[in-house]
Image (cartoon, rainbow, N blue to C red; front, side):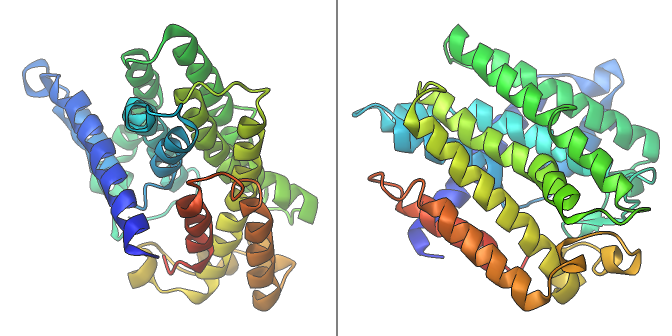
Length: 304
């Protein structure tokens, strides 16, 4: 990863976290008596991570902004970046719960239900899933943009998107999924939020759904989302708990269906690279897309 991309990712992560902290600082949790739920939300929100989705929001806003308004559109997109990070964090909290994956480590720290308790973690995830839309509603985007953003995010996170993927994921813990089901699982559970991030960036730049730029953004997102998940499955087999910050080998030990159920390690690595190469063709024709191209390759070459 070049320094320019690294600095841009770190800047986006920092600005996104500023918005998340500001949102919670406006409340008086100790006086009212709900400090614990605020602490649980912030514990998971600020636990680190690559901030993949916020970066995609701001980068597509910057890429497709009208000439002379690049910085303005990227800045205006930050509430959308914060909102999708709230949704992503809610999904991680719930994914780790005993009734789901029952994981005890996330990003090298105790999972939310271990650090607090199961009921608090459940409510923290619920609260974040709702707060995301308040962040969007309070943004300085136009009302049509806010309406589009709410529709896109709610669809991606709901029963037609991420939650549908989680249902398939649970099925895969007790039944061997077909390759087609596995493909659908990851397009829904991981891919839909990544598509949503790219779409939100387009919305911040006032790019309409019938615009070729919007379609290219979704093509790019679909590819990198699938490659991202294949890489996750590879790392679950080859990585370490120290590097990844989560329990390693759990999927394989529980006979859960993954891409490595059907592909060897080398085949999976080759698949991820080929899917990524195809994905970047959707955006590398645009001036200024160099960081998005490198970012796509970084996702498949990462060690955590």
